[in-house]
Image 1 (cartoon, rainbow, N blue to C red):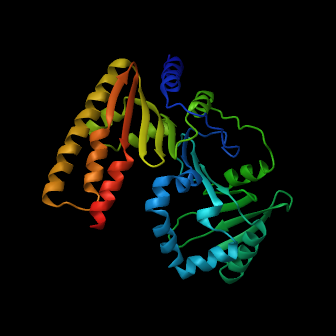
Image 2: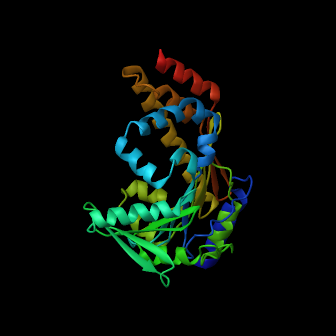
Image 3: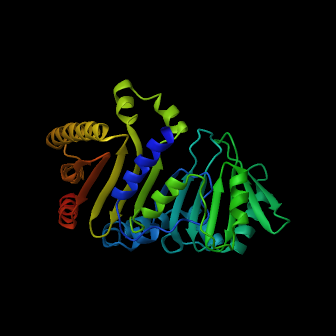
Amino acid sequence: MIRHRSAVVLLALVVCAPMGRAADLDPYLPEDTESVLNVNFKQILASDLIKKQVLEMAQEALRGNDQIQDVLKDLGFDPFKDLDRLVVASPGGAEKDRGLIVLHGKFDVAKFKAKAEEVAKENSEHLKLHKVLGGKQMLYEVNMPDLDEPIFVAVPSRDTLVFSPGKDYVLDALKKSGKTEKPTLKNKKFQTLLEKLDGKQSVSLAVVKTPGITKALEQAPGDVKAILDTIQALGGGLTISDEVKLEFVVTAENAKDAQELQKSAKAGLGLATAGLAALTQSNPAPGIELIVDFVKSISVKSNGANVVIKGRISSDTIEEAIKKKNQ
């Protein structure tokens, strides 16, 4: 019964998920993946909004940090030109050393290796080098004073860097280097969900409810927990161009729960709008009106077992907020 109900829930989310150009599954996704966060840096940095309002300030801030500049120079890496995408893949369990973070872009493998060897000689307690897979690949073990466990890092190819607190995840990623096969996930329904999501979104998230998530929700306050317990899956994200669009689909166990979720979400939005409006009048912080306009734009509609959430900040609204800030 539980399996059948889960299949219905995921099918509903797949049908109603934000659609566009379907996303290609990242070839480095671990087979136990049940949640994915995707940040498309290349698309974000190329958007009109970021180029006009953010890019120059971010570049200037980075240029002002000599230490980071020296490291980036040694690595031959420019994050504003060479970083394409970040993918955070996590399984359903609660173990701390599970999951994999993948960076795609342009990486000079030789320079990364040379820099790692230099740091390992000077700070062997912080960085250890391991030859793996018959000596064909390098695995970097990073031990930081503020971390309880090491982080394992590898550069499988000139367009991919991976890291994880789980050594086995990084070794598995190294084994996939040079291969083009689409990953096969253990959770087939979650894989179907990922393949249906909009690949053009700037930031996207897809997750299904797992025993690990259920356990984590036990720490939430009673009324919040009661709401979250009804959520079975969600997918969607933000699209940044000359404006910002939000589109998410949240799937409940049934239509009745979806209607309750819709009511709770609308009530929460009403409280947020009232609170922000009061804050705007008493202490108008820079950008607060932009947040108010965005919250006001959010619509919440139920459709069967799904709750569809949409919001938008227009380019005109953003331009007006920036003008007021600069006055």
